[in-house]
Length: 393
Image 1 (tube, rainbow, N blue to C red):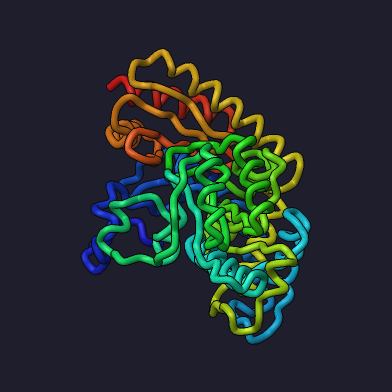
Image 2 (cartoon, rainbow, N blue to C red):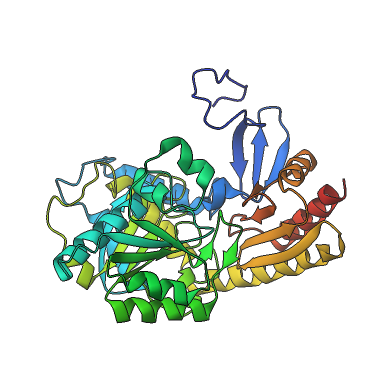
């Protein structure tokens, strides 16, 4: 195992100059190359739901290795991928699953599936999409077009045409755009992540569902970050009771291995044909075995109950920080919480790291807290204490 810093000159400079070299981890703690330990409330950006050195994942890896099938491609059937798909469908809604390698790929596939469905269902040129201000759906050409980050988009223009943006909460605008008859699907995160940890109001989500039904348009929920136990429900949409036509998943799904998924209802699946889309690695037997163990663990009722309880404890702790002039608001759900500040978030994130707490921003003025879902009460209290110290500096 590498324990010393290795020169990173061969890596393209797409991530700036990372301040730490991490070499090991256990539970909710990681260790850097210099031997210092950090309490991790980033969790690989909401990926490491079961923390580090998880016995659940270790057992699943051992099981996956026993068959010798790390990869086969989708030219052949394998049991682990089919079993994982059946579990996801049973947890979500009746339909089918497409596996890929990341959240951006899952959303890209969802856009393609929506266009295929619209063409087969309406046949009238409905190829457009409606996305929302504050959205983040990925950085591929299709998903980048649906991401409300001008600084991400501008260097790569022109991106995919046909995406229009509405303000969250403005149903009148959505109806106006839908009335043009050019929309294949409406795409939204039930809880915006990169856009500042913003839960979408239940009434608005229900209004979107009704509007999509009225105009014959698909509703796509991007739960790449907020899904699979993060909010205290198996899926974030359960809080509103609004069921989408297409659901996208990724981050925690593979237990740290690359895996994304699209769950599409039967109406959408019936329009897809062999060859419409594909992946070489998605849903392979190794990663599917690990993912199945993760899903069964984080979606178990007792586990979800614990996430809700821990989320309430973390929220209560963060709300004690409202007495600080720099703190404006606490928002989010479960263990996906944001601390909105009256100042830039980056210096607070940096100060917290110096104090031994790893966090990440969500927009210019929001500190995001997405710890492993196994975080203890003591670690939650420690994180709040370190955060208070960091904001005061």
